[in-house]
Length: 220
Image 1 (cartoon, rainbow, N blue to C red):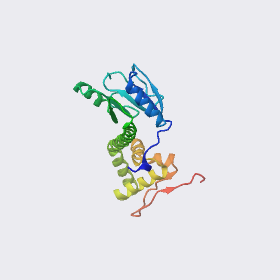
Image 2: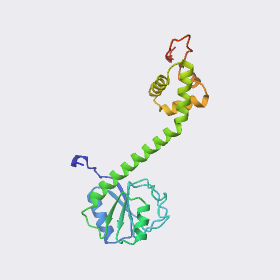
Image 3: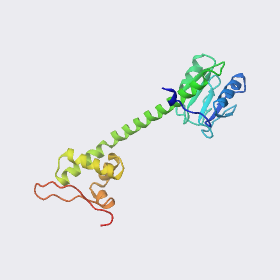
Image 4: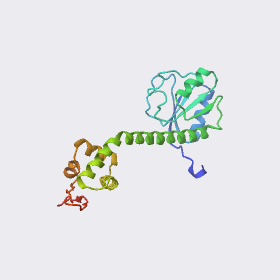
């Protein structure tokens, strides 16, 4: 990562969930030097993810129920503040899925790096989870896609690849996913959703001639 790609944290809101100590003094001072707006809170119970963009939390005194979200599903980047190495503490901290960590006693050096890593890691996780969700949706929609392709193929007497290409083109024109379009067609059991809702007419073939769908403009 080059210098030009590094984020600017000015006006980013940080929450520090840690008791008042020398560590918090160092952390808050450095965060404010970096331009962040910092709030501190302790004790913390069922902390809601509102009013801040990144959370620094005390891994040495953390407990279940401290945050309002489920462990491992924080809606903002988490940065763990770790002082001890007790196995139970490490296990609990890992369960929160922090995007970065800092080792106590805290020093100004390393805080900026932890912020950069935390935001980068959080964004990469978000993109990966979104991609996994999209792939899962595609897998669930496969029966609907097959049903819609077969229906178009039968009605228009064209090959399966042509039917799929036709549906894909229509999905792009309508600015929806092909899975969503196919689910709509499969649910109706006909091509009527396209004909009735989108102004598309799928004519029946006569003889061996292959026909393309006729697109009717809204003004006709």
